[in-house]
Each structure stands twice: as structure tokens, then as C-alpha cells.
Length: 429
Image 1: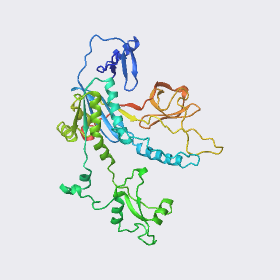
Image 2 (image 1 turned 180 degrees about the horizontal axis):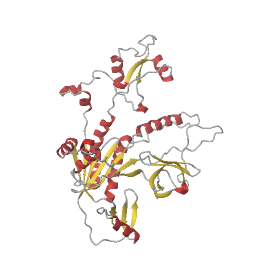
Image 3 (image 1 turned 60 degrees about the vertical axis):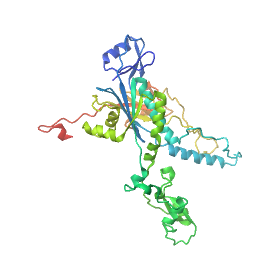
Image 4 (image 1 turned 45 degrees about the vertical axis):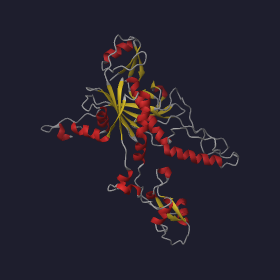
């Protein structure tokens, strides 16, 4: 599938007439706009513009979002996007570095908080990243396909119902911390005001609440992740003299984030593309559509059902998208080596004519630059991490396209094994 946009940037219907596309490029009547997905821009004004209604189905997700654009008869574009999940860890590291800077003897300025105000509509960075990623991907797809309608599947999760399926009525207001001032008071009462490691044998009267799983490692402040320890055991645990095998309790970050982002994502897309073009659907409708049409359970099938075209034909090709961190703002490394000269944490943007994550061609294989060396040898890989060459020289690489905040790779369907004699392919599967 070759995607086509007009001379003024208006998206047109894609084509599979590869001979026609080659002729247009050879005659300088079109130019390559993007390598993946392969998109051309016409350099002349066509006599007519035949555009069909295209519906884009968006299956939102915490770690993976799926998109399917199709007409009633044919699937035009399908993609699975891998979201970033490192935002909480980066925010924790930033706060730790800020504390280290304030503790320096040479920094006499007091912390200032009066000049910091959150704007109206502020959202946590982890939630803002998810919303922006969904919104930008829909914008990119609409730039090379004439999308006339956008359908989003949203979900609301009842956390208390997940934890206790039998909860009902007033029980929602009678949680486990009912009657306690805070989580710490409840945890001390739950553990009988006794250290859970030594059982009070150390005779330490000071009790503290410890996180089983650190917040930087994905832990939370819920009582399931808290345990009562005496001050002595707490200190020995943090110094490494005592080792424990606490199990990580089940978290509900994914469910909470998806419940929080659904209305905001719908509001942003309607503000950008128009309220009439953006609609919402629910998971039970998608499930009913999939079952009625006898389709298998998969992300791309769900996105197709969300778009309302579950039986649209396709060659099976789809695209894998990976969201990248745009820029590492840490200029210098934390440790200062001997001599007092701090080393830079950022490498040069261009080395040997190539940058990190640029799309290059190596021996007929499209791949990405995964690692660079100042000597001109690069580590090139596929999007899924498959190594193409650990040290390819820049002379053997051909630049195809500069990188942006997203990596896109075309994936082909896996061929099915041939049917054996007397055995149907359905039985083999």
C-alpha cells in the first residue's frame, strides 16, 4: 500500500498500483514524502479527487495502543504502538537530583516555590505523555489518509469491584481504612503494633512503616505494599544486612490511568478534529461485534471492530510503532572524575553523517541505528531488537530517513505451514 497526498498536503486515497507510482517518481511528477509508511506527494494537481469515507478505530491502552483505518471493503492501515512507561522513574530520578543540587555547599539559594503555579488543566506527566502520544499518532495517520470519522474505545475500571467482586451498595464507602486517620495508622493496627521481621525481639519501641516495593520500582502507598518494622530492622534492611523476599502486590496503575484519560482524550480529539467526526464506543460493543463475526481475539481485530469494519479485507501487513524519548536534558554525568572535569552525558547529535535511530539501508535491509561510536562504527538493529550488525561502518550505510519521535516498521504476515496430506490447515493451527 502506497499512501498519496496532494500537492497542497491534502491526503488522498492510497494505491497499490506500484508501476504507476514508479512512473510518477521517475517522471518527477511525485516525490517521496516518507519512507515508512511509504508516502508520496504529487507535484501536479490531479483532475479529480476521488476520496472514500475512511474510519479510524483507536483501541487505547497503557503500554500498547492499536489503530486501524479502513473502508467498508478494505483495510488501509493498521498499527500497534508501544507506549513509553519510563516517565515515573525519570520523574523520581529528577527529584533525587534536585535534592542533591540543593545540598551542595556552594549553592546558597533557598528553594523557591512561590513562583511555581500549575496551569489550568494540568495533568501528571505520565498521564500527559499517554494522551499526547495517542493524539499525535491520530494526527499523523490523518496526515496521509483521508480520515472522515474517528472512533475511540474507552474503558472505566471499578478498582474496588476488581479487588472484591461481591462489593455492593454502602460497602463502597466502608473501605479497609475506615475509622483510621491515614494509611500508616491502619498498617500499624493491622500488624498489631509489632515488627513483622523480629516480632519485637529487638525491644525497639520505635515502629516505622516500610514499603515492600520501592516507589521508584513501581510500588505504591497502598496498605498492601506497606509493612510495620522496628527502627533497628528498618535500618538493617536498607543497609543490606537483612534480606527479604517480599512479593510485589498487585497494582492498579493501568486501570486508574485508563479511567482518568478516557474523557480527556475524547475532549482533545473533538477539539482538534471536530465533535461530529469523533465518537466513542465501549468494550462490550467491541466484544459483541467480534463474536458475531467469528473473529479471533487480538488487538488489531479489536481495533478493526471499533472502526465498524470487522470484515474488511487486507493483505495482512501492519506497522509497529515505538514512541521514543525526544531528548535527554541531563548535560553532564553525576560523578566527577579525578581532575574535576565533568564528562558530558550527551553525545554529538550527528556522527559520520548519521544520528541515533536514523533509518538506514545496510545490504538491502532497512534498519535503525541503535548505538554509535566516534570511530564511525554503528550498532544497527531492527525495531524489535533483532541485531543486523554489531559494528557496521558508516561507509556501508545509506541514509533513508532522519529519525523523529516515533519509529515505524512495516511487518509482514507470517506464512502458514503447508497442509499435510489428509489434514486440513485448520487442524494444523
